[in-house]
Image (cartoon, rainbow, N blue to C red; front, top):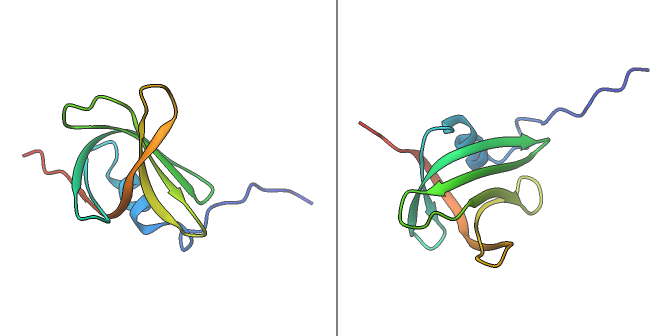
Length: 104
């Protein structure tokens, strides 16, 4: 019997996370659940099975690292966390929309 690593099912991956993954390494603009927006330069974006993690830097005065991750039950939510001054991360918000930034 040959054991194979479990491959992610495209149907179970979060659609917003897939969009971020497909846009990266280009910059993204996200809309949060509270209707605020932010623009990020993507440093990395990857899936671990069905779970997504991206590392990004906002394109404003905040140069702290931000993490974009899926949380919750399958397929879950996509949230952004900002690095705290003393270590760890604090939640910025839940992403409800993603678009590529037009650099032209």
